[in-house]
Length: 485
Ligand SMILES: Nc1ncnc2c1ncn2[C@@H]1O[C@H](COP(=O)(O)OP(=O)(O)OP(=O)(O)O)[C@@H](O)[C@H]1O
Ligand SMILES: [Mg+2]
Image 1 (cartoon, rainbow, N blue to C red):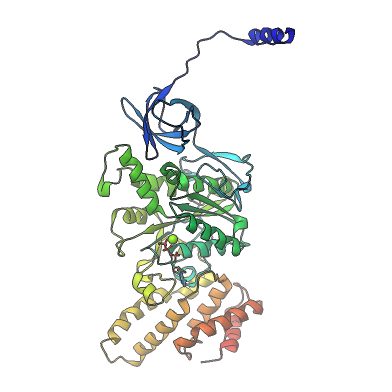
Image 2: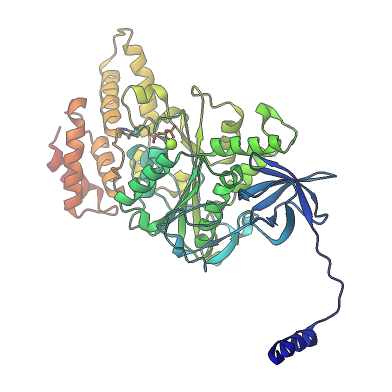
C-alpha cells in the first residue's frame, strides 16, 4: 500500500499541468482498400493514420469535409465508427544489408516467414530526387550478359532503361538475366514485383535462388492479393532500399516489374477516391508519379560517394502499340528502351529485341571502348540487312556484294539469339564481335552457329585473354579456334 502511494506521489511530482490537444477522427465508410474519415483537421497528404482496431492507412486525398485514406493494414474489426489518430510520421522503410536475400512488402515487413532485424537506416519512401549538382555523368557500363543488349543497346550505371513489349515476350526474363549477371560484380539488386500472382513471385524467387543471385538481391513484393495501397507503394519502397545503398557509395540495380500494373493500381485508387479522371481515366498526375520515381535513379558525383542506381522499369503494350498513354510517358521519362516484338518472338528470335525500335540514349558513352569500337556500324549494317532481306523474298536478283551482306546478316541473327539464364561475359562479347568483323564466321552456315558459339565460349574462358589484350593477339587466337575462312 505504501509503495503504491509512493508511486502516485512520484507520478504527481513529475506531472506538468498543460493544455493537451489530441485530434480524433472517425471512419465514415470503408471498402476496396479505402477509408473515408471525418475529423483530424491537421492531417496532411502522406501522413500515416492509426485506427484503434490496429489498422493503418496513409492520407491520399483531402476534401473540405472528409479525408480519403488508403489502407496499408486492415483488421477484420475495421468498420464505420472506428476511431482514428494521426500517427505522427510519414511512410518509411528500414533499409540496409539485412534486406539482402529477403522478400519484403512495401513497408519492409518480411514475407518469407523468417524474422527480420529492422534496425536498418530508416528512409522515407517518397523523397525528392538528388539535385543536378549531386549527380555525375553515366560513365561505367552495366552488363546485362545478353549479346544483343551489351553490344547494340548498352546500358550504363545510373541509366533508366525501359523494357517494353506485349505480355509473354520475355520482358521479365531480360530483367532477371541482368540481375543474375551482376553476380560477383558488387552491384546490389532490388527486384520489385508489382501486382503479380503469388505463384509468379515464388517462381522469380526460386529462379534467383537457384542462380545464386539472392545473396545480393532484395525482392519487394506488392502481391495481386495485397491491399491496393501496398501495391501502389511497392516501387517507392524498392527505390528507397536501393537509395540507401547508393548513398553509401554502392552500385545498385532496381527492376520495376511492371509499371503498367502500377499505373492501373494508381488509377483504381484515384477513381475510388473520386479524383477527376483524365486521359484513359488515369489521374492527371500519373506522369509526375513515374517521373518522380525514375528521377531518383542516377549516378552520384564523387563527392557524394559515387554510388549509382540503374533502373529497369518494365511496361506492357497491347498489340505492340507504343503510342498509348503510359508507354509514351515512360519512353519520354527514361534514357532509352528495349522493345520486344511479337513477330520476332514467334519466329524463334529470342530475346525478341527489335533493334530498329530499341535505343540507348546515354549508354554508348559508358560502353567499353573496345566493345563500342567493334560494335561500330554493326547495328546499322544489321538494320540494312533486314531491309534487304525483304527484297529477296520477291526473288530480286542481287549483286554479289549485296548477297554477302545478306549472308553475314543471317549469321549475325543466329549469333544474337541467346537462351535465358545464360549470361555471357564482356570478354566473350568482345571475342565474338572481333571474330564476326574479321569474317571468321563467314564460312559457316547459320544452322551451325549455335554450336560454334558454344565452342568459342569455352575457348575464351580458358584463353586468359582480356578486354585489354591486343587486337592482333585476339585475331590470331580466334582464327586458330574457328579456322581461317
Ligand atoms: N531468351 C529466351 N530464350 C528462350 N525462351 C525465352 C527467352 N526469354 C524468354 N523466354 C520465354 O518466354 C516466355 C515469357 O517470358 P517472360 O515471363 O520473361 O515474359 P514477360 O513478358 O515477362 O511475360 P508476362 O507478361 O507473363 O510478365 C517464358 O516462357 C520464357 O521461358
Ligand atoms: Mg513478366
